[in-house]
Length: 401
Image (cartoon, rainbow, N blue to C red; front, side, top):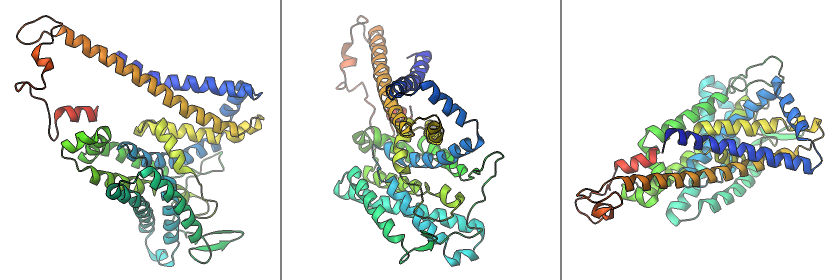
């Protein structure tokens, strides 16, 4: 397939998705008696304010971390639906540890590192339950992680009480607030009442590690190979159960980081009843929108966060904020539909290219262009070696492409 054709196909999916989303959203707005032009003006006007831009970046960091956690599972055809429960439980216990009195005597950097490590360990530990059920009993990770979400929510509510890990703060309850030195100072931005969260850097670092892991390590190769074909991975000598367990733990560890920007940069500096909810589920949508690609998920998380940040401005134009949720859903559907259409078109083009190449290639030993000869039939031809075994060039090329 020509490079220009590949480029056109790569652009067709996002452009097509955007057009479908704009068209359907406009129809929804018109059907509900609102002007698409007014909605667009409200959204554009919102981003003329620094506060909206900063909020978008801060929230996008949370969404991106959740998306990476989900994408690690997606690469292996694992559906870690439990990111929401993993990050909330991890944030609660990390906040509790960070607020303990002995932490006040530690250097600031060490306190922050310990807090982050606790969050990652708790997230990985909670995900390990689903991983163990998967590799030892074959329990679907979808079912187990959904149930673990419910259990985690109940367990978190039980722990976040004055009889256990929480203290009373006004009319609210929270973990002991983290004292100075245990959090990371935020960056004040002129014209914005909301500061910029330095923990955005953590999200970018996780994205870089994710990209490196998948493209430059044997572990990443094994993840992608297992996701593409479990039987081929087994034939290549990959321990599939071990990879499933490791991928779920890694996914859970990243999920544990989702709450860190809010905990270490937020105003409360504690886990309370006001802690953000539902980020894990948004991470699934962002991972799908971004096609599990490190850069694609950045764009998707920014888009999703921008829609959230502009919802208040839409209300100012007498447009219900609930329509933002509809826009997000429409956008997700549009992306799924557009990418599926492009995928089928790409497959048909590749099939035609292969057919033309085979028809034009004369077989060894004579014959016309259309005569495939014994070699093309020939998986049974002992002189026509079929690549197999560990680390074959064909499998490596398929996975890395």
